[in-house]
Length: 217
Image (cartoon, rainbow, N blue to C red):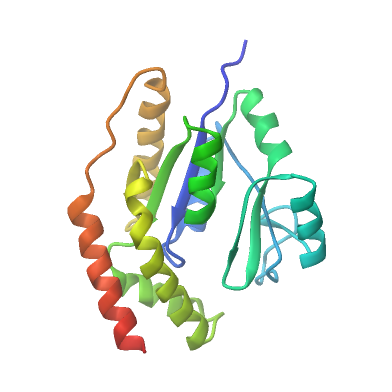
């Protein structure tokens, strides 16, 4: 008889590398299932409908909202993002550990519905590195990059709601450490555990973000 799977919520600043991190985690380990979100944003080069995201029109997305078809949904930089409910529940019942890669608004909504969910926040080694990664994509205008940095500054206010912070510096090392953390958490799911105190780290990140955003204006 399968145990019920663990719901794992991954969030992070745009440019922190959470998408790359999740892709590598799923390549290296078989026990995880990545929930595919639906979005109204246009596909980036190389993205395939039904693999990275379910791409939809705004009308289709809003119809699904009315039908109660999302665990959570939110707007980010002018586009909708949402987590389809049926896929997640099916995977959890089958014993899969389901990873939701969503923004901070959605993470808090998921925690309300699934109190046992584990919330992880991915950060770059520094805000300077975050800025370099956003610029290095070469896919967005300076205006959009500035919007993402301003959004990161807003998101930094809610990081305390997460159980763990993951620093994404070296990809291979980060993936290994993330898997070990999730394995230990899964083994201890029936017991109480104490989230790590990240107060100083969060404060430093906020200070760096505020300085960078003010410099961009």
